Amino acid sequence: MGEIKRIAVFTSGGDAPGMNAAVRAVVRTATYNDLHVYGIIRGYQGMIDCDFKRMETRDVGNILHRGGTVLKTARSQDFRTKEGRKLAFENLKANDIDACVAIGGDGTFTGAQIFSKEHKIPFIGIPGTIDNDIYGTDYSIGFDTAVNTAIEAVDRIRDTADSHNRLFFVEVMGRHAGFIGLNTAISSGAAAVMIPETETSIDQLIQKLQKGAKRKKLFSLVIVAEGNQNGGAAEIAAKVKEKFDYYDTKVAIIGHLQRGGAPSGLDRVLASRMGFHAVEGLLSGKKDVAVGVVNNKIKFTSFKDAISKVKKPNKDLIRMAEILAQ
Ligand code: F6P
Image 1 (cartoon, rainbow, N blue to C red):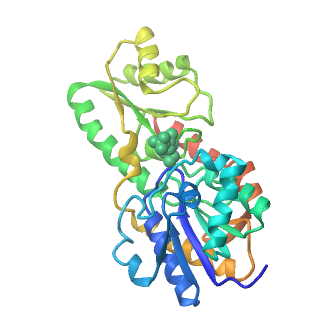
Image 2: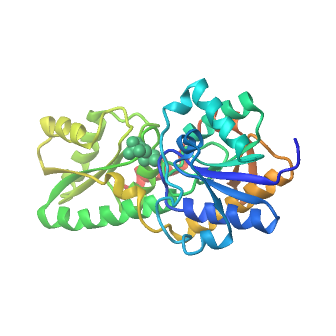
């Protein structure tokens, strides 16, 4: 690998609060090490469209606390094609880019892995996704903020559920993962949680709700991760209502509210650490790996493992959630 003088940084896939803090850390650490940094607008699509922007220390001032991503993001279909990736590589070369920092989730890392193999350019990944479903790090950027947003929403729903003696099904994000669902359920005292990683049948769910009704529980909350096997909150609510109509039932979908907003303190620190160590990692010769924090220590995991290995929610937390929900 030749000497790295110019790097590019981009965000890709779903945005996550804290991505800006990571961009800032990348730019400032790189500048401190006398590297030139280019931001690529709209991720892989911007690489193809040659939308590059020189970034210096002052360009990342006043972004640390902002949600979304100042570099914008996209889910590029063109980058899935060989021709698209060839064009992207030509644009990187035309801008003398020696290495890239990719901030995003598993789709972003998959793209990076294919591209760096095809075109021999070093990539380093930073896990940025509210879903927290990236192997190789305890937490990904945006997860903590998203959970806090969901908790705040559920607390409000709890007030009205309590006032009207209702059963609420609240849907949170997590296309393939139940991390947001599980943490939100524990933190908001939900009666049950439906996540993709554990199988809970509608009958089992009804049994749980019946137990509560027997104890004269006046209202109840069920947290539904969007990716669970039984369908979304509306579908589950309808199935439950058919067999169990003790409560007046309502549905709330928190949706993209969870993706926006100022990053939490934890996310700001996590993103800063990851951005900083991504650049230091590149400079020390690391490539095709994602930076992570495991047991509060920086760890690098190959893209191959980060993509193919599945991170599962802590079983102990799942068991505890069941017991505390009684
Ligand atoms: O960022 C991850 C995620 O929030 C998933 O949980 C969700 O299913 C998906 O993104 C929705 O993304 P989009 O709105 O970009 O299609």
